[in-house]
Image (cartoon, rainbow, N blue to C red; front, side, top):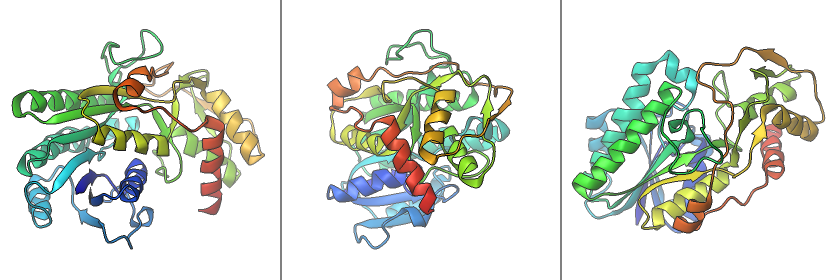
Length: 312
């Protein structure tokens, strides 16, 4: 059976595709290559097919996928395609709504078109906003602090609506701060990659705010495994996907410094709009519902990540 993976050439997507292929699935990638890259993919694998198409373009999405599949051939859809950086979403809200919301509607319609039972959606802890308690669990209030979080929350509601109205089995995984090899470089890079790139380039890294704000960092291959387990489970609803730990940005910086062997004084800049102060996931339900828990220690994951970027 085949699995459709939107955003499959990107950071989380490519690791998910590798895992699916290793488990014997065929994979159809849907990606516009805005951030994804063919270099992330095992293109020699005959069970992998790649469609260059934007999920927000329904007519192209429908036409190109219909050329490859027929009803009943798809085991499920893992929907990862999105604009994910808070600043990028703020700078181009129309594009963000097209990709993150309209794209989700199109993926759900695609599932209906091909009579697919199961849709796994990449949501985010951003749906919670500033936590009112820690660790954040599935019952935590939903109050996004930025437009990115709003797009993910609306998409969660779309999944629930399609589950009720059309009988789709849907599951939303609320990722916390995912890091690892193949993170997106450039001006919208996440904090882990920003630190690594700056230190490897001999530059002073930037810390926004005091650096005392905390995040829950979860390794990308652990997240890929969560996607697979969610696909193969019967659980519907939402799950928090993090490490269950809480690390300050300053502590993260010193961990990266220790690995690289260089630790200049960082440059501090004002906090960015929409940034929360603390973050930590409760992962108890993820273990109970789909048998998932993270396997990678933060220091080990950072070492693997630094090794990757030294080579690339």
